[in-house]
Structure formats: C-alpha cells, structure tokens
Amino acid sequence: MKKKLLSSLLIVAVLTAASVLPSYADGVTVTNGEAVTVAPDGANSAEDSPDKDNIPAQAEYVAFEGKVSDITDSDGYKRISLENENGGIVGNIKQGTTVIDSKDMSYKKTSDIASGDRLMFIIPGNSPMTASLPPISSSVRAIIIEHDGINVKTAVFDENMTDSENTLKLNIADSTPITHIDGSKVRFTKDDIKNKQCLVTYTVSTRSIPAQTTPLSVMILSGDMSVDPTVDVTVKKTGLRELAESHGYTVEWSANDKPVVIKNKSSEITVVCGSDIITVDGKEEKLESAVSLEESKMMVSADIAVFLNASLK
Image (cartoon, rainbow, N blue to C red; front, side, top):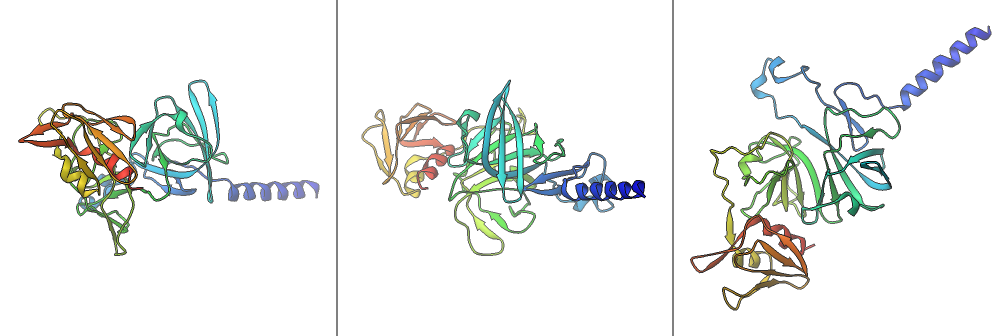
C-alpha cells in the first residue's frame, strides 16, 4: 500500500514539474516569454517541401525584451537578467557583444547598461538555452537599448517591404540608414532588405492595415553581407541643407571653409567640410564619409539622419 502511494505521488510530482518547466527541445526557442518554433537543421526545410518555391524567408534570430533587473560581472562577461510580464531570461554577455542605442543607433558598451534599462536581446534562433527558470543564454548576438517613443521591431520583410504578419510596411527614404548586424561598411539599399529579417526602429505609423512607417533606421539581421568586390559600395551622399531643413532644422552658413551650424529648438549640430567628424550638442560623432563640397553644394553621407532624427524625440 505504501509503495503504491509513493508511486502515485512521484507520478503527480513529475507531471506537475512538466507543466511548469519550459521545454527547450530542438527547434524551439523563447521570445517575449513564449516558445517559438524554429525548424532545426535538416527538418521542414525548403528542400523537403513540395512547394519549396513559395516558402517564405525564415527568421534567423529571435528577440527577447525586458527590463534589466540585475547585472553582475564575471570573468570575461556580464550576466544580465531581464524581466517582463511573461517571465525572464538571463544573458551571459561576452566582451565585444554589439550594443546599440535605439535612440540614434549609436554603438555602446555593456558598461553603459544600467539596472532598470529596457533591453532587447537578439539571439540566434537555433542556439541552445538552459531549461532552468529563468532560462539562460550565452549566445546573445546583439543588445538593443530601448527608449520611450521609439518602436523596435524584428521581422522578415517581403518584396513589398511588408512584414510576414501584414502588420507593418516600410517606406524607405533616401536618408534612411541601413546597416547590417555584422558591422559591414557596405552601403545597403532597400533591395537588400527584401526577404531578409531586419530590426527596424520607428516612431509614428499610419492607422492602416498594414500600418505604414518611414523608419528611423533598419538593421539587416540575416544573410551573409560580406563585401563583393564587383559591387559598387560608394557612399551615397545627400545635400546637407535639404536634408536638415526637411527635419525642421535651420542652417547657418558663412563660408565653405567655416563650420556649418544646423539647429532646432533642442539641438545643435556642427559640420565641417572635409571632415567626417561632426559635433552633436557638444559631443563628437563620426560619419560614414567626410563632408564634401560638390558643385558649390555641401554634401553629407546619409547616416547623419540618425542624429537629426534623435533630436526630434
């Protein structure tokens, strides 16, 4: 009788634990506290599908958002705990992990992260994760620092720049900075976004279906973006005055060899012809290319738009 009772209690305990602990089998990962299926290598691939030509592009990364509840230092890495309404996750962050501020897409260090910050972990979809509570990942590829008023979204965008859930359509402007998670200096265009998983930052959007927005920035997450020597990677430039005025700035110019000052009610940016260093509210920032004078017109690389956008928040 005692043996039967003990066996029954053991079975109940096992079933209860199984209902509480998350299962991280092959091809399953976690995003926003929920399990998301990712096809493991060799399973459910396009090659195995009878309609492989119509298989949509798959996400290579998953995102997990939350507020920093704890940060501790260890040998060679930081241990950052995130919490949200669906649970939490702990990231063992290696030195040199990419940290990006969504406000202006500037690169930061892990030492810039503080308790209470809102972060997004970008994690490869097929990376291992512990079955503990909270789960632990040592494969965080990038960290995005989030801010109020700035939306951050990861999704695969199709040929029409619409995400796979038909909730957001991108209207890419000439001044929209497009980068890649690997830090490649290739000058990307909107064609490089098509059928790729991207991280997008934006503010306002229309109330249509799908909502439409002109993003502040786009970071391509998927695909090999190594430099092809046959491709023209010349940095695209745009007129400084036109770009600044379109963002609500006034332009103060005195001579071609003098600093040009562009400002609005809350920000002041100084630009010098021949230099790739600009001053934004007293802080030096580096552009992708030096400012140049072409046919009596001051030309700047389009990535200056991230600083113009940042001052509007």
